[in-house]
Amino acid sequence: MENRRFVLVRRPQGRPVEADFALVDAPLQPLSEGQFRIRNRFASLDPAIRGWLDDRPSYLPPVPLGEAVRATTVGEVVESRNPDIPVGATVLGLFAIETHSTGAPGGFTQLVDPALVPSLTHYLSVLGAVGLTAWFGVCDILAPGPGDVLLVSGAAGAVGSLAGQIGRHRGARTIGIAGGPEKCRRLVERYGFAAAIDYRGKDVAALAGEIRAAAPEGVSHLFENVGGIPLDAALTALRDGARIALCGLISEYNAQEPVGARNLWQLIVHRATIRGFLVSEFLPRFSEGAAAMAALVQQGRLVFDEHVEHGLDRAFPAFMRLFDGTNDGKMILAL
Ligand SMILES: NC(=O)c1ccc[n+]([C@@H]2O[C@H](COP(=O)([O-])OP(=O)(O)OC[C@H]3O[C@@H](n4cnc5c(N)ncnc54)[C@H](OP(=O)(O)O)[C@@H]3O)[C@@H](O)[C@H]2O)c1
Image (cartoon, rainbow, N blue to C red):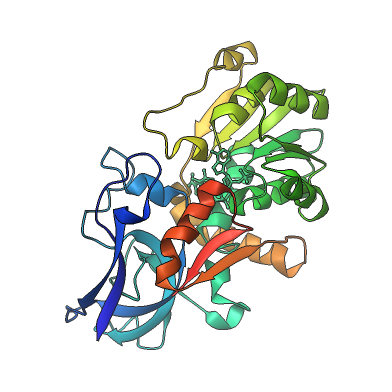
């Protein structure tokens, strides 16, 4: 049997192009003691993958050239030399965009129960790293409450839409920034943001004016997914003692040079705190976060969207939707 893989053949320069990747068939290798083979059903397409394609210092090594692109996947065990991971089990882990992955225990790898969810995709969205990023980012790093104003950039996306809802449930007034009128309508009507701001076509001054108008009392908590203009604008609208969770900087993932923030002076003015975080730092508490998210879903207090595309040949265009803003929810590839 063959393994069909979405392989990195060239490191992207700026925005990735299709020729940076290739679909390659490779024979399945025999398993070693302790390993198991997963038939991947779904792969999570995350903005973070873009960073893993570059050869530069980061929290994970770069994807080697000639290897399948790293991604979180969920699928069934079809062969096993590990008594703890039997054939038929469902496994979630950091593997690759390929039909078959070889797993070993440790790291993020975990057994999940398909009977607990209407769709396995939920383990890649609301109950997966995306949901946990929103949960720990809002509850642990920001901890907003009544009287606070939580501003979320990338608010219509997978992490942002959940972060806004969690903040609202904690009693904060939530304001979302997203691209285009349709997404802004969704922020208010579907995700319950008190106000929505369209960032497209606006410079820092124009966007800052809209944020200050939506939050005259100042932004007390910022969940930052984007960087660039939205971050610079938000920095000018902070309340004293504001807290910023730096979750992502998607606006510069395809930039050849870092873009940076220009209004850092405002952190001094407002005695504000900025804290970068990785969801992986909360690994020992994943089950606690997943239980909290599952409870909110069960209570009907959390809505979430998934954008599923089908087939390995859709891997590239589906991935690029994240950077064009044409994903309507958590971007997932069905394999
Ligand atoms: N720290 C962590 O552990 C962690 C974990 C997961 C995710 N993240 C970060 O969280 C952020 C959101 O990830 P996600 O998985 O939820 O993706 P997502 O928000 O579902 O999709 C990406 C969205 O980003 C926006 N975007 C893309 N390019 C942009 C640009 N140049 N300027 C402004 N907005 C742009 C688009 O929305 P618009 O149409 O609104 O522009 C797009 O739909 C990313 O920065 C990601 O790296 C961090």
